[in-house]
Image (cartoon, rainbow, N blue to C red; front, side):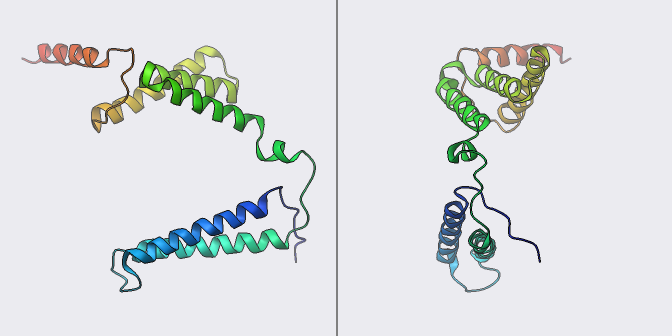
Length: 172
């Protein structure tokens, strides 16, 4: 039998929180239709909630069987590494500037900063991938699914109208 591994700091608390969330999901799934039939509206949520509870229980049991926590690094450095904190700050900045700058500028800036910081690529490489990703997301959501995205300072409606006029001029 394998020797139990040492656990990370906070692992038991996290496992218990996941068990609580799984029980909450199972309770709400039961509230949809109870145990009426396999074809009821609540059957799939009940099955998913049950799988979540069983998996969470296994993790809780494993966390209580494992040895004492490793102390190779500090508690907060283990739970909140610098990259995670930095990325959360980037997401916070994105949330603050999204309405003012709009999706195109804020999204491109966010992706460029994140890719540059996490992968340390050359600036032109980062900008090219960021622009391509934002363009694909924009076309998919704004033009295909017609989801309204924050416009900001880029006059997207005017640009789309101009493109539409040029496309109409091309028709015979």
